[in-house]
Length: 173
Image (cartoon, rainbow, N blue to C red; front, side):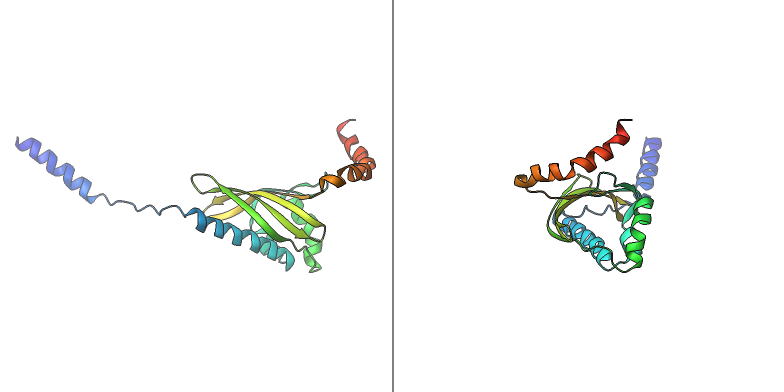
């Protein structure tokens, strides 16, 4: 009996010494969405101010930027090289979000979104993926597309037929 009591006392002592780790509650969806809105607005603002460091620091080292031209599927480094002359001139681009939809996984560390943008090209759509790494958000992928009204699609198809056929030759050699 004494042995059982001694073992019980040791186990209870051991367990009482073990500190509980406090786990921070996940950010509420509303607060997280506000954080993401601010993050993306700041990213667009960095481009409008031609702030190269602030803009590209929000992109992950493995991120991809897909532009409006069929040839624009860039790694971060390629996109930096393409963009640097514009930022150096102080004339990057100014995209203003008109609306944005944000979605998240259950762990709140993975975001996907779409946004309607006012740009120098007219109305565009941006969509992307963000991941939380080491307590900060990073853009993993961003896709920019020019919005074409359905009524104008046939005219656009005719207009780009020649450039599409030249571009597609690289896939059908």
